[in-house]
Length: 426
Image 1 (cartoon, rainbow, N blue to C red):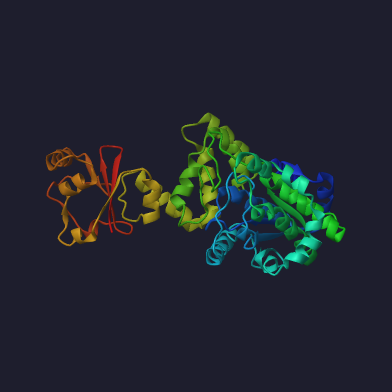
Image 2 (cartoon, helix red, strand yellow):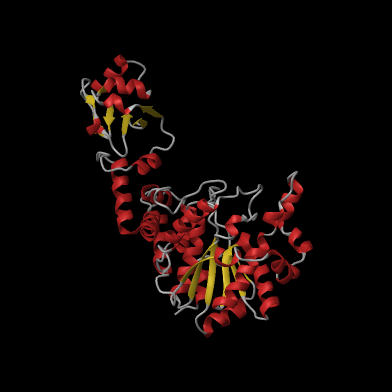
């Protein structure tokens, strides 16, 4: 069986390690408790965070114990890493709601039902009770302000923003470092993992644990992942693909992975699936031989969707894909899938009272902007160029009623091959 550090390296999860030889020896000596943290600054994790969950899963499969840390405490502060502006401070109610949702998402990937197998912890449990003077005396004395200011994320804010950085965000590094020291003392945690933007925070925790407890702990980070076409994964900018099904539907999740560029698919198969390396290599070869068939992307979309949304979510994604790209009616599509599938399509809202007596198909086409007049709408219908919820609508006298609604009250009109219009009755 491969050493877990070799497995992580081979699959792209390793950029830097505080002491590679020491960590290798530690992971070989027995079970290691380690942690990965995520702040509840949004109500869902995204696929950038999923890299951390997958790294945890690989280490758990090798016999080590993960701690999924939800930053209910640090989330009240906000990490300045990777940001040019101040994070919006959330209310206690918002944070509590986000924490609960993140718990559910993490459990899709790692096993935390048995505390001996894995733990789910909220750092608010120990941070909220800290006394300021005690914290400054016991923790703050170990930090050099000169070194903290030298951090790239802090330095950029000081140089490029008129108001610099608040003391609130500046103190984040101390709190995250204290998390590591606390977890070492409380549950014997010896390793923290995270993205490369967390290197400064992680090494601060390694150093603080040594100073407070006289013990050596380790840090490991992976490179921040972007697509070769420049699309980012972060929630603060670029394109975010959320793990929560009510924010990115299983259909949209499946489609995102299905449409990754060929240049990324091998790398993403290593990061986002549990497929063996040999099978990934064969899929990469098959994609070179048949790029139009996209065999590697299909495998990636299938496995990634199954991991996060289960077999039911995968089946839902495939049903929606078959309907949206085939001739099946849209009857079973939910509102979130419709929103994801037709993002950017013209959308019109009409009062639901219009459905009491029904609304004529021609009138609906005009109201949606699909035709300039009833006469043009009639010609489109008579020529067979109109579909209602993906079913050919060839009767100009058809009246659209409640029976035609899909999702939470939507009708999808298609004119020609690619012109879609949504009408929502709400």
